[in-house]
Image 1: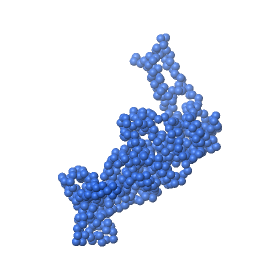
Image 2: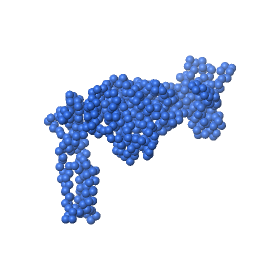
Image 3: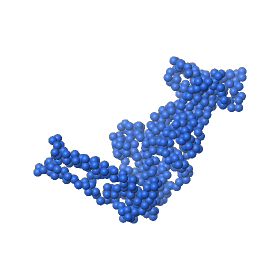
Image 4: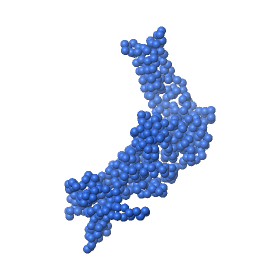
Length: 611
């Protein structure tokens, strides 16, 4: 076995270039032939002085010999030896690895199933995760994603890098840098794709991200159409939501990185906002990146314009986006809507309410009122929400009263304060901190003759009519669908509530936060990879849900992640070495998922090599 430098030409351009090959001499009859075992590529940069030691180390690994590493072989050379030996084992063996007698067997590519081996020589090497990768790649192929990328002009390495980006985000969420390390050192995805990620430069992942974002409209349209075909749903409802993510670093070169209100309480960092319009089943219809300080109401028109939703489609969204201007625009465009009302005044009369059973068999009471436009206002009362509201109100009231008691105690303490300005300042901060409770308190200050000192502080609590505290557990929905009954309207709105838990996986499970990039296109590419990953995760979870498995993606991922591909190496009596590479047996719950999805229990198949 040796390494040979070879001059060849590019088939497309005709330009000459140099490549390197791992070659072995094999006797065939009376002749000796040189057989190429691996093409090492044109970027093989190991010093030529180390080539003999590298070839020898590869041969030792193939023969299961644990000899001491050759001191003339660098650490980089040792890593290459491990990588090339693993590739030879994973590949179908060539004629260089078998004898002429074995070549006469019906399947010369593999040793027989029964071998006499030394059990003490058993060695398990090169474990790589394969369970999540197999499931992700299967659902991706069911959507025709790789074929679509090819139709858009991406070549095989670009497609592999794009697939690696997305599946990496599903299986091991993180930055593209983290994904690159995961693909090279921990994942068997390359074996499933037939692509060597260990030889892939990090920049190829970044360029793949650019390519995905460049074709974002075509890819979103394709995947949404595939979801409609796969699940057979009709597009009648659009769910609209926004989230934001923060940057690590100043992001000075990112035009949309702005300071704003962070949903992760990271307002100390620049932010960028991701808006998504989804159908009623939770599949992304359109996504767009806005500045971190973008006003939520201002994003709706830009997102829905040109969406192609059918006339009379319904838009479901929360109160933050449901401004009067947005609702008027939706009506003008022919949309219906079900939204959380921004009205602060609440009312609820149990005698006028109807009852609806939730999915959890909880009774929800709904009172319908028509507003001045003839649209329906649904005042909904939830027992669970009432319990939560009362607990919050009690905690806020206790906090506000604790501040008042502390101010009162300070009036008589030697080091306390009676200064009116300081007391008003502290009282103002308390009202800001406990605004939910403070609105129900009337605080009276009694001042001395100078008007600068406070003699006493008293307060009374009066619950404001129409407030949340007056009607705990009550929230108001607003809709143009007055012809629908209360139960149908409430369940339509709860689609948004249920989706928030699914949509949360995009924010927490798929590497959306934080962003490390400092270039506009890379920032948007990073977010779009998470959107694509979300689509495939949602597809897979819906398939499982149809069979009664409603686990979160984190749970599903942890279940699938137990499966690995490993190579078992054993010595035969005649001194030759048998290598068997296959996946570990799936655990029972993992096997159940495989059966539902129709996946093989042995992803990547079994490769047997006799050296």
